[in-house]
Length: 528
Image 1 (cartoon, rainbow, N blue to C red):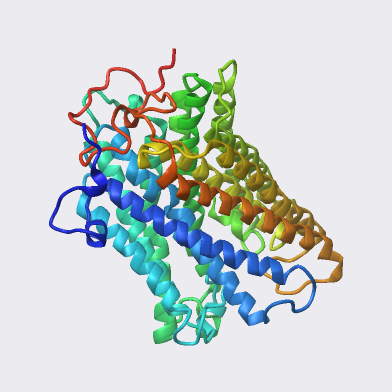
Image 2: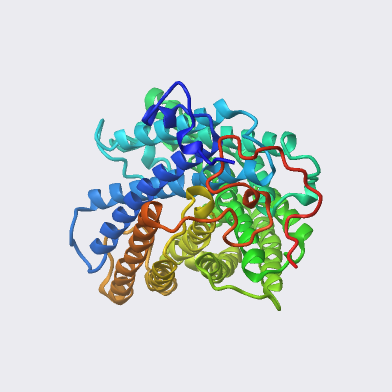
């Protein structure tokens, strides 16, 4: 079987053959290449912000410039990288392969979702250079400031709105594909756990994303037409915006982390040579996280003003949502017990993920408790927690799955030595950058501040040095993967010894994935 999806004959050639392709693998690679550029851009903005914060007072830029960079960094990392990261890039590529399908249910809709994504990104970037200049509200676009600022918030918000349409279309496509296109014999409990996680994510994308779309349209209506939804001067309620924003944005956390957990559940049994422990518990915990994720948005607003009863209920639900995550961590560790573990790069990233995500999750419980939340709310403690969950969780799992599936996607192996060094540098740099922020937050350092008192300088200096180490690891990882695309050893069809269906076809897969649709007779993780 000839693996030739990179040069599939058609009516287009060159770049048009990619940007007009309906092949799910090409669309996944389009997402991946764009996200890599956006991620490196967001990293550069983060480095500039850390350089500014290395000392009190002005270092590199004015406060207005810092606020613009702060907003742009958040918008890029959240809406252009982390939310679409694993589902849109790796999910697009791997989901049909893992269920034995030739493509997704709606190939043209899949291409349309990428066009919405890239158009939204272009609109958001255009907002930097038009109107009143780069938006300076922070990535949450909190009112009433986002209504009153003279910067070009409206265009940036419209860009995020377009990206939301992309996310909704992707979720619709994935849910339908999983329901309708599974290979013969692939029952629900023979599906790989990555597919389960994408399924749960798809429902969150479908049901939660329209809420933020409506909210952003309301914000634009208020800016253009003076409709008083949120502006207290016109009888509006700024707290309503917070409710609507977090009704989407907390489920969005699970759009980010659920596919990461699914990828981890794929990698551990391969490198431990063990059948996954508690398959059904992990599958149902993905659905449980998706369900509870809709109910806990209020814990972002404990200090915004709500009744004591509401705060206690949201606090209880916040602790309950930790249970299915704990089930996953327990089952991952149990799956390694007495395994023949291979310490290859994907597994190293998975170990880093479990450690960092556990820290992020446990510090999330500190914020879920009402008494401690009042102390740390709005401080650098929140910044540290957020990055331990989103970067230490989602991004490290993304790096793990990228190294795991790199041979399948490219047909090449990467340099293992360089990859391990990059993983180690990344891990050290990450903790050096973000762990001091827990201490800074506990000491009272407010987040989002351009300047600070001298008593906080030591923590900021350590964090800034950590940002340099972290960036070094990221650049080394990207260099290694890009170089391996050209010079890497040719990969076999199954270099890791995996048992799921994507390893039953060539590397890279052909245009329609399989010579004939496979028939499934056993579960996905049968290791002898």
